[in-house]
Length: 329
Image 1: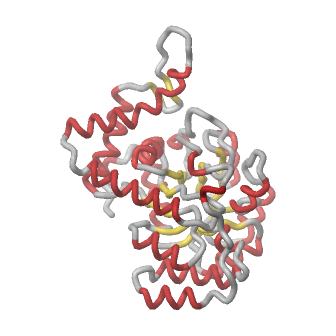
Image 2 (image 1 turned 135 degrees about the horizontal axis):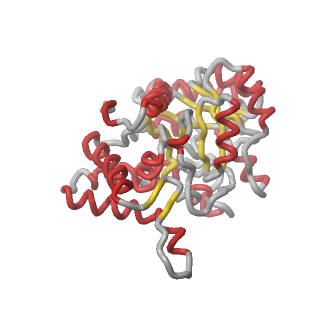
Image 3 (image 1 turned 90 degrees about the vertical axis):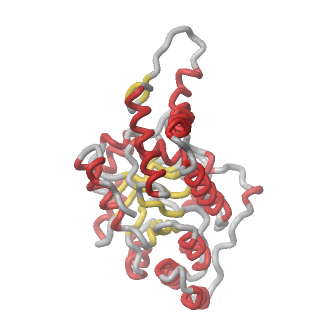
Protein backbone atom coordinates (compact mmCIF):
# COMPACT_ATOMS: atom_id res chain seq x y z
CA UNK A 1 0.00 0.00 0.00
CA UNK A 2 1.44 3.38 -1.06
CA UNK A 3 0.32 6.68 0.42
CA UNK A 4 0.75 9.92 -1.51
CA UNK A 5 2.30 11.88 1.37
CA UNK A 6 2.04 15.18 -0.52
CA UNK A 7 -1.74 15.08 -0.25
CA UNK A 8 -1.96 14.67 3.53
CA UNK A 9 -3.62 17.70 5.12
CA UNK A 10 -1.03 18.38 7.80
CA UNK A 11 2.19 17.03 9.27
CA UNK A 12 0.46 15.40 12.21
CA UNK A 13 -1.67 13.34 9.83
CA UNK A 14 1.49 11.84 8.37
CA UNK A 15 2.69 10.92 11.86
CA UNK A 16 -0.68 9.44 12.83
CA UNK A 17 -0.88 7.23 9.77
CA UNK A 18 2.75 6.30 10.21
CA UNK A 19 2.10 5.06 13.74
CA UNK A 20 -0.86 3.01 12.52
CA UNK A 21 1.27 1.54 9.73
CA UNK A 22 3.78 0.33 12.34
CA UNK A 23 1.12 -2.05 13.70
CA UNK A 24 0.57 -3.64 10.28
CA UNK A 25 0.74 -7.43 10.20
CA UNK A 26 0.35 -7.78 13.95
CA UNK A 27 -2.10 -8.53 16.73
CA UNK A 28 -3.50 -5.93 19.15
CA UNK A 29 -4.89 -7.47 22.34
CA UNK A 30 -7.48 -6.18 24.81
CA UNK A 31 -6.07 -6.35 28.34
CA UNK A 32 -7.53 -5.43 31.72
CA UNK A 33 -4.46 -5.54 33.98
CA UNK A 34 -0.68 -5.80 34.11
CA UNK A 35 -0.76 -9.61 34.09
CA UNK A 36 -2.73 -9.73 30.84
CA UNK A 37 -0.51 -7.01 29.36
CA UNK A 38 2.51 -9.20 30.11
CA UNK A 39 0.83 -12.16 28.36
CA UNK A 40 0.19 -9.96 25.33
CA UNK A 41 3.71 -8.55 25.18
CA UNK A 42 5.35 -11.96 25.71
CA UNK A 43 3.28 -13.47 22.90
CA UNK A 44 4.47 -10.87 20.40
CA UNK A 45 1.45 -8.54 20.29
CA UNK A 46 2.27 -5.24 18.57
CA UNK A 47 0.11 -3.22 21.00
CA UNK A 48 -2.45 -3.60 23.79
CA UNK A 49 -5.88 -2.04 24.27
CA UNK A 50 -6.36 -1.07 27.92
CA UNK A 51 -9.90 -1.45 29.21
CA UNK A 52 -11.51 -2.46 32.50
CA UNK A 53 -13.42 -5.41 31.05
CA UNK A 54 -13.03 -7.41 27.87
CA UNK A 55 -16.03 -6.98 25.52
CA UNK A 56 -17.63 -10.28 26.59
CA UNK A 57 -17.81 -8.99 30.18
CA UNK A 58 -19.03 -5.55 29.04
CA UNK A 59 -21.84 -7.28 27.16
CA UNK A 60 -22.67 -9.49 30.14
CA UNK A 61 -22.69 -6.64 32.66
CA UNK A 62 -25.01 -4.39 30.65
CA UNK A 63 -25.64 -0.77 31.67
CA UNK A 64 -23.66 2.20 30.38
CA UNK A 65 -20.08 1.31 29.39
CA UNK A 66 -17.68 4.25 29.72
CA UNK A 67 -13.97 5.00 29.36
CA UNK A 68 -11.82 2.93 31.72
CA UNK A 69 -10.62 4.47 34.98
CA UNK A 70 -7.42 6.52 34.50
CA UNK A 71 -5.62 4.60 37.26
CA UNK A 72 -6.23 1.32 35.44
CA UNK A 73 -4.97 2.75 32.13
CA UNK A 74 -1.94 4.30 33.84
CA UNK A 75 -1.08 0.96 35.42
CA UNK A 76 -0.87 -0.64 31.98
CA UNK A 77 1.07 2.32 30.56
CA UNK A 78 3.59 1.85 33.36
CA UNK A 79 4.09 -1.89 32.94
CA UNK A 80 4.50 -2.49 29.21
CA UNK A 81 6.99 -1.39 26.58
CA UNK A 82 4.66 -1.83 23.58
CA UNK A 83 2.12 0.80 22.48
CA UNK A 84 -0.99 1.21 24.65
CA UNK A 85 -4.37 2.13 23.19
CA UNK A 86 -7.58 2.92 25.05
CA UNK A 87 -11.26 3.32 24.19
CA UNK A 88 -13.49 6.37 24.29
CA UNK A 89 -17.21 6.49 23.65
CA UNK A 90 -18.40 7.51 20.21
CA UNK A 91 -18.66 11.30 20.11
CA UNK A 92 -17.26 11.80 23.63
CA UNK A 93 -14.56 14.42 23.19
CA UNK A 94 -14.11 14.68 26.97
CA UNK A 95 -12.97 11.08 27.27
CA UNK A 96 -10.73 11.36 24.22
CA UNK A 97 -9.04 14.48 25.62
CA UNK A 98 -8.33 12.70 28.91
CA UNK A 99 -6.76 9.76 27.07
CA UNK A 100 -4.62 12.09 24.97
CA UNK A 101 -3.47 13.95 28.10
CA UNK A 102 -2.57 10.64 29.77
CA UNK A 103 -0.23 9.76 26.93
CA UNK A 104 -1.93 6.75 25.38
CA UNK A 105 -0.61 5.99 21.91
CA UNK A 106 -3.96 5.69 20.10
CA UNK A 107 -7.65 6.22 20.91
CA UNK A 108 -10.28 3.74 19.78
CA UNK A 109 -13.57 5.62 19.31
CA UNK A 110 -15.44 2.45 20.04
CA UNK A 111 -18.94 1.06 19.65
CA UNK A 112 -18.08 -1.45 22.41
CA UNK A 113 -18.72 1.42 24.83
CA UNK A 114 -22.09 3.15 25.05
CA UNK A 115 -22.24 5.95 22.42
CA UNK A 116 -22.32 9.48 23.86
CA UNK A 117 -23.40 11.39 20.75
CA UNK A 118 -26.33 10.11 18.65
CA UNK A 119 -25.45 12.38 15.73
CA UNK A 120 -21.71 12.75 15.25
CA UNK A 121 -18.36 11.11 15.90
CA UNK A 122 -15.33 12.95 17.32
CA UNK A 123 -13.46 15.38 15.09
CA UNK A 124 -10.25 13.40 15.14
CA UNK A 125 -8.29 16.04 13.21
CA UNK A 126 -8.29 18.18 16.38
CA UNK A 127 -6.03 15.70 18.23
CA UNK A 128 -2.30 15.07 18.10
CA UNK A 129 -2.64 11.32 18.68
CA UNK A 130 -4.09 8.88 16.13
CA UNK A 131 -7.54 7.29 16.28
CA UNK A 132 -8.89 3.94 15.16
CA UNK A 133 -12.59 3.61 14.32
CA UNK A 134 -14.87 0.75 13.35
CA UNK A 135 -16.77 0.46 10.09
CA UNK A 136 -19.31 -1.91 8.58
CA UNK A 137 -19.17 -0.54 5.03
CA UNK A 138 -17.23 1.80 2.77
CA UNK A 139 -19.44 4.83 3.43
CA UNK A 140 -18.84 4.59 7.17
CA UNK A 141 -15.11 4.00 6.67
CA UNK A 142 -14.86 6.99 4.33
CA UNK A 143 -16.54 9.31 6.84
CA UNK A 144 -14.22 8.18 9.63
CA UNK A 145 -11.09 8.62 7.47
CA UNK A 146 -12.18 12.09 6.38
CA UNK A 147 -12.80 12.95 10.06
CA UNK A 148 -9.18 12.00 10.78
CA UNK A 149 -9.04 8.28 11.64
CA UNK A 150 -5.58 6.80 11.00
CA UNK A 151 -6.79 3.20 11.17
CA UNK A 152 -10.06 1.45 10.34
CA UNK A 153 -11.20 -1.88 11.77
CA UNK A 154 -14.18 -4.03 11.02
CA UNK A 155 -16.67 -3.69 13.84
CA UNK A 156 -17.45 -7.39 13.93
CA UNK A 157 -19.55 -8.28 16.96
CA UNK A 158 -17.25 -7.84 19.94
CA UNK A 159 -17.34 -10.27 22.83
CA UNK A 160 -19.20 -13.03 20.98
CA UNK A 161 -16.40 -15.31 19.79
CA UNK A 162 -18.32 -15.40 16.51
CA UNK A 163 -16.37 -14.18 13.48
CA UNK A 164 -19.34 -13.93 11.09
CA UNK A 165 -19.94 -10.19 11.56
CA UNK A 166 -16.26 -9.37 10.98
CA UNK A 167 -16.40 -11.43 7.77
CA UNK A 168 -19.61 -9.65 6.73
CA UNK A 169 -18.06 -6.21 7.19
CA UNK A 170 -14.81 -7.14 5.42
CA UNK A 171 -16.76 -8.58 2.49
CA UNK A 172 -19.00 -5.52 2.19
CA UNK A 173 -16.14 -3.03 2.36
CA UNK A 174 -14.27 -4.94 -0.34
CA UNK A 175 -17.40 -5.20 -2.51
CA UNK A 176 -18.05 -1.48 -2.27
CA UNK A 177 -14.41 -0.68 -3.08
CA UNK A 178 -14.76 -2.73 -6.27
CA UNK A 179 -17.97 -0.88 -7.10
CA UNK A 180 -16.27 2.50 -6.59
CA UNK A 181 -13.56 1.45 -9.04
CA UNK A 182 -16.18 1.07 -11.79
CA UNK A 183 -17.44 4.66 -11.47
CA UNK A 184 -16.65 7.61 -13.69
CA UNK A 185 -16.20 11.14 -12.36
CA UNK A 186 -19.94 11.78 -12.20
CA UNK A 187 -20.51 8.50 -10.39
CA UNK A 188 -17.83 9.32 -7.82
CA UNK A 189 -19.51 12.67 -7.16
CA UNK A 190 -22.84 10.87 -6.66
CA UNK A 191 -21.23 8.41 -4.22
CA UNK A 192 -19.69 11.36 -2.37
CA UNK A 193 -23.10 13.01 -1.98
CA UNK A 194 -24.59 9.74 -0.69
CA UNK A 195 -21.83 9.42 1.92
CA UNK A 196 -22.25 13.08 2.96
CA UNK A 197 -25.98 12.63 3.51
CA UNK A 198 -25.45 11.12 6.98
CA UNK A 199 -24.03 14.44 8.20
CA UNK A 200 -27.45 16.06 7.66
CA UNK A 201 -29.13 13.87 10.28
CA UNK A 202 -29.24 16.50 13.05
CA UNK A 203 -30.86 19.14 10.85
CA UNK A 204 -33.24 16.52 9.48
CA UNK A 205 -34.39 15.69 13.03
CA UNK A 206 -35.49 19.26 13.68
CA UNK A 207 -39.14 20.13 13.03
CA UNK A 208 -38.55 23.90 13.07
CA UNK A 209 -38.13 26.14 10.01
CA UNK A 210 -34.76 27.50 8.99
CA UNK A 211 -31.49 26.10 7.66
CA UNK A 212 -28.30 25.40 9.61
CA UNK A 213 -26.15 22.75 7.92
CA UNK A 214 -23.29 22.63 10.44
CA UNK A 215 -21.34 19.71 11.95
CA UNK A 216 -18.37 19.38 14.36
CA UNK A 217 -16.27 19.04 11.20
CA UNK A 218 -17.48 22.26 9.59
CA UNK A 219 -20.37 23.15 7.28
CA UNK A 220 -21.92 20.72 4.84
CA UNK A 221 -20.57 22.44 1.76
CA UNK A 222 -18.22 22.10 -1.18
CA UNK A 223 -15.19 21.83 1.12
CA UNK A 224 -16.71 18.79 2.83
CA UNK A 225 -17.60 17.36 -0.58
CA UNK A 226 -14.05 17.80 -1.84
CA UNK A 227 -12.57 16.20 1.28
CA UNK A 228 -14.78 13.13 1.12
CA UNK A 229 -14.29 12.89 -2.63
CA UNK A 230 -10.51 12.90 -2.09
CA UNK A 231 -10.83 9.83 0.16
CA UNK A 232 -12.89 8.07 -2.53
CA UNK A 233 -10.30 9.05 -5.14
CA UNK A 234 -7.64 7.37 -2.97
CA UNK A 235 -9.83 4.26 -2.67
CA UNK A 236 -10.35 4.24 -6.44
CA UNK A 237 -6.63 4.57 -7.11
CA UNK A 238 -5.38 2.11 -4.47
CA UNK A 239 -8.12 -0.52 -4.68
CA UNK A 240 -8.29 -0.50 -0.87
CA UNK A 241 -8.76 1.91 2.02
CA UNK A 242 -5.97 4.52 2.19
CA UNK A 243 -5.31 3.70 5.87
CA UNK A 244 -4.31 0.52 7.69
CA UNK A 245 -7.33 -1.78 8.05
CA UNK A 246 -7.59 -4.31 10.88
CA UNK A 247 -10.19 -6.93 11.67
CA UNK A 248 -11.96 -6.93 15.03
CA UNK A 249 -14.97 -8.49 16.69
CA UNK A 250 -15.49 -12.19 17.32
CA UNK A 251 -12.03 -13.56 16.48
CA UNK A 252 -11.63 -16.55 18.79
CA UNK A 253 -9.19 -19.02 17.20
CA UNK A 254 -5.97 -18.98 15.17
CA UNK A 255 -8.02 -20.09 12.18
CA UNK A 256 -10.27 -17.03 12.58
CA UNK A 257 -7.19 -14.78 12.55
CA UNK A 258 -5.84 -16.49 9.43
CA UNK A 259 -9.22 -16.16 7.71
CA UNK A 260 -9.39 -12.41 8.25
CA UNK A 261 -5.79 -11.87 7.14
CA UNK A 262 -6.44 -13.88 3.98
CA UNK A 263 -9.42 -11.60 3.30
CA UNK A 264 -7.00 -8.68 3.03
CA UNK A 265 -6.92 -7.32 6.57
CA UNK A 266 -3.67 -5.71 7.75
CA UNK A 267 -3.86 -7.09 11.29
CA UNK A 268 -6.08 -8.38 14.07
CA UNK A 269 -7.72 -7.03 17.23
CA UNK A 270 -8.58 -9.73 19.75
CA UNK A 271 -9.53 -9.70 23.43
CA UNK A 272 -12.32 -11.93 24.66
CA UNK A 273 -11.13 -14.67 22.29
CA UNK A 274 -7.89 -14.91 24.25
CA UNK A 275 -8.81 -14.15 27.83
CA UNK A 276 -12.11 -16.06 27.78
CA UNK A 277 -10.35 -19.20 26.54
CA UNK A 278 -9.25 -21.83 29.06
CA UNK A 279 -5.54 -21.23 28.33
CA UNK A 280 -4.99 -17.52 27.53
CA UNK A 281 -1.19 -17.67 27.31
CA UNK A 282 -1.17 -20.44 24.72
CA UNK A 283 -4.11 -18.93 22.83
CA UNK A 284 -2.26 -15.60 22.61
CA UNK A 285 0.85 -17.31 21.24
CA UNK A 286 -1.23 -19.30 18.76
CA UNK A 287 -3.16 -16.31 17.40
CA UNK A 288 0.03 -14.27 16.96
CA UNK A 289 1.60 -17.21 15.12
CA UNK A 290 -1.42 -17.70 12.85
CA UNK A 291 -1.58 -13.99 12.05
CA UNK A 292 2.10 -13.87 11.11
CA UNK A 293 1.86 -17.03 8.97
CA UNK A 294 -1.75 -16.65 7.81
CA UNK A 295 -1.02 -17.86 4.28
CA UNK A 296 0.79 -21.03 5.38
CA UNK A 297 -1.84 -23.66 6.19
CA UNK A 298 0.68 -25.93 7.92
CA UNK A 299 1.70 -23.11 10.28
CA UNK A 300 -1.93 -22.24 11.01
CA UNK A 301 -2.61 -25.93 11.70
CA UNK A 302 0.36 -25.92 14.07
CA UNK A 303 -1.09 -22.87 15.81
CA UNK A 304 -4.47 -24.59 16.14
CA UNK A 305 -2.76 -27.68 17.59
CA UNK A 306 -1.10 -25.52 20.26
CA UNK A 307 -4.46 -24.95 21.95
CA UNK A 308 -4.46 -27.25 24.96
CA UNK A 309 -7.79 -25.92 26.22
CA UNK A 310 -11.04 -24.77 24.65
CA UNK A 311 -11.70 -21.48 22.84
CA UNK A 312 -14.38 -19.22 24.29
CA UNK A 313 -17.86 -20.69 23.95
CA UNK A 314 -19.23 -17.90 21.77
CA UNK A 315 -22.70 -16.67 20.90
CA UNK A 316 -25.01 -16.89 17.91
CA UNK A 317 -25.72 -13.34 16.78
CA UNK A 318 -29.46 -14.02 16.64
CA UNK A 319 -29.49 -14.48 20.42
CA UNK A 320 -27.96 -11.08 21.25
CA UNK A 321 -30.03 -8.43 22.98
CA UNK A 322 -27.62 -5.66 21.89
CA UNK A 323 -25.85 -5.51 18.52
CA UNK A 324 -22.78 -3.36 19.12
CA UNK A 325 -21.89 -3.34 15.42
CA UNK A 326 -25.01 -1.28 14.76
CA UNK A 327 -23.74 1.57 16.93
CA UNK A 328 -22.07 4.50 15.17
CA UNK A 329 -23.00 6.19 11.93
